[in-house]
Length: 86
Image 1 (cartoon, rainbow, N blue to C red):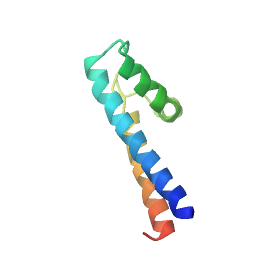
Image 2: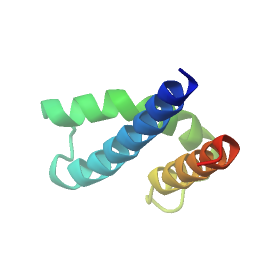
Image 3: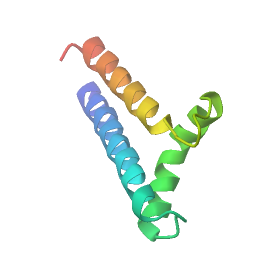
């Protein structure tokens, strides 16, 4: 039973990582953020990126929040995998 929970959490983290990458890519093509895909990706990733954005300083218009979020997700995934012993 515990293996299913761990697999679900790891899968969820991978989906969240892909959603962050998708949001970054869509920001290049849909600047105003009006396309449905962009809105969905924003809704999925904003609970992670929003609090990070309020903590990280602004770097002249560049948003490094997705990079930091991806690094944090990878670190958390590594901790989970090492704790489980896979």
